[in-house]
Length: 121
Length: 131
Image (cartoon, rainbow over all chains, first blue to last red; front, side, top):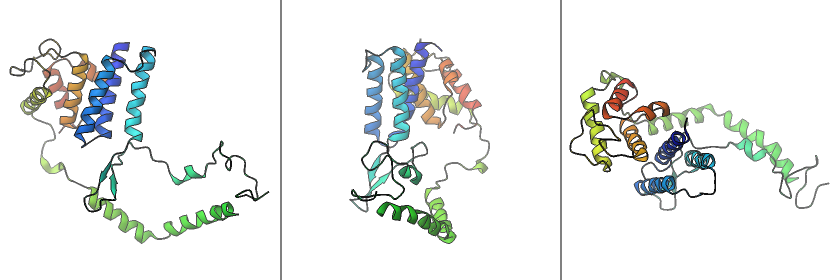
């Protein structure tokens, strides 16, 4: 596909993603779409190659779909928010928390005895 | 010490949750009843949309779109680019608006080929998911 066509496809994906992320929130939806159109006319990263700019927009579309969740204040309880988690939202499960983080002080290598607060060993 | 405690306690909790099927079942029926909103019934007759109806709705979407310069005289033969003066970005936006109106997703390859009202209407009437 031509570069032009790919850019338009990315724009289409971006517009669809705004609908998923900001469904029901007309203000954000319109603002996101205006921003996206402005970005098509006047790219935010002109130093990047055209391929990279298209990739950037595709990544934004993916991010909006997976990683943006809107919260709505519940009418009954002012302190609570209803999160609009939809089918594209990226959800980790509890197993993720068991994978040790490599670059923390306590993460990384753990001795079989285990240790906490300088103890163990 | 604390960590080893957590590690040993985790499977226990999991076992406890899965061991109560009654609670799980009642939870799922509760969720099912809450989130189901009937939009369209299979018994509602032929799923295919009437072509005139689709044309009318597509024209309504174009009129609501606002950017077209010939809003009053849209016919099935109207071309997005030449007759309505839409640029390529506008056309993409318009087709996304049409997708939202009919609750469908037009595949990229087909969407690139749609240049006129009639082509769009033909695609929508041929799509069984459109409603």
